[in-house]
Length: 201
Image (spheres, rainbow, N blue to C red):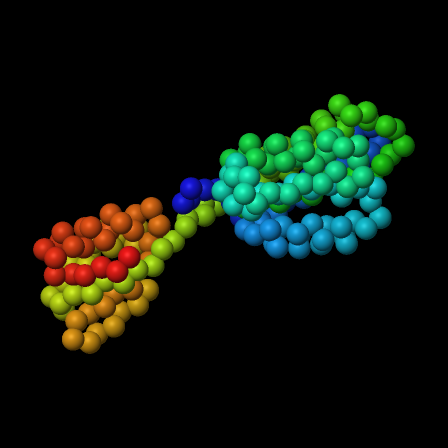
């Protein structure tokens, strides 16, 4: 996926379930390192909590290449796994969620824990602002000076922009655009110039 929704900022929601306090915090995490840093930060902030359970996906929505989860002392399978299922099914990428629990003295049972932790993730994601992440690609093209204006006119059609220009014997353009449109623009430049523009993808 070359474009997908990602968190635009952090969000936090709190719930009291049978006297236990659940604090769900979601944050952007484009890499495993960012996710782990966020989890460490939450553990430090809520160092006195009973549990700091987490789930994250660093990458496109639903991708399992870079994921993580932890029950953090809750019965196996009652926190991290249900949290991860919600994260993977959310349609949001580069996402980490920590659900912090302060035990209130009443046991919730395995079903209750699964509902509380997955519900915490759903609640915070409902409040989470998102923005589109677009994978970019940069390539070089070069050609005669006569193509400077036509090239500049063509770029907006491909959501492309000039990130550099070098004027020597020919003009060399450094062009940055969404990855999925790079090959189409390269073909359009060659077509436009009847082969006078050379493209290095």
